[in-house]
Image (cartoon, rainbow, N blue to C red; front, side, top):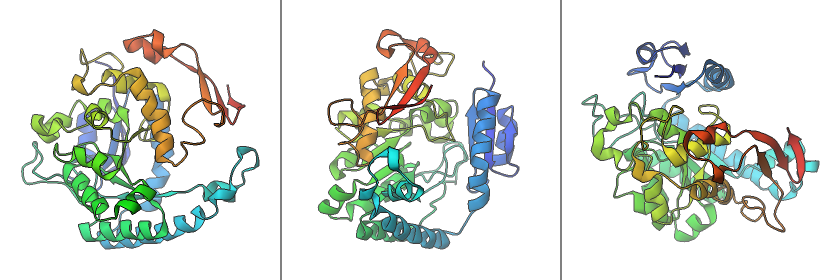
Length: 353
């Protein structure tokens, strides 16, 4: 088995650990614990260095304080969003223009699955009596989302457990259909969702904003946390796609690798870098290359209200694209991980090589 490096950003003693038991000692039953596994020391170092300042500067707050801060953030983002129409060409962007591109506000509904902080409808399978943590009360969550709607700012709510996802869906359902159409509300991660709630994403026009590498990072222990029955609605990309849900894929950097190829590989194979498990984890939820690419490009552009500017390569759209060393349509399985990004282009200009 390949070596694993565990990064603990929030726990009893933040740092990088070489084995799961050492990591577990830092995060088990620690409120708000945040950690992730990586396949190499260099990835772990980059992730820890890139995110530790964010954790240190934010700390932890009570639910009421968190709600107050989130409400203030909504107002600040709304003010910036009013200027975004002036920020058109990357060639002339200033710091103020970049700030003006803000169109959403991130809200946290629960914690992480690994540390058993994700809010569940029933007890954790490996810890009876624990159902995780709601960071916002349902009332505060609706208050913040209502504030976002009043300001015309898209709410993007972190929800991992099935209870948290239900609370967010209920809050979105309380908005009018016209508000939802204008806001394009998002749920970030949607990792464990009750089967009855999955159709509600499409019914309410809620974007499922997910990160494929979460599935392959979490698969060694996710079943222990929630059991086989709840896994049916976990990392269930195919179930969303089959219901015509708007899906937007991303990386969740710096928690996961920012490179695009590992995300594609995870979405298509649901395997780790060594090709395990054979056939993929929960293989009925695998996507095709075309489906995965669509979620990473056109789906992500739609989630950012930019589908008329980016997301596809066609006349009239911005020329934002990458050049790869191989055609991903011509390779299979682990060979996908050998593909390298040769250059990156923004608005028709090469910016990296």
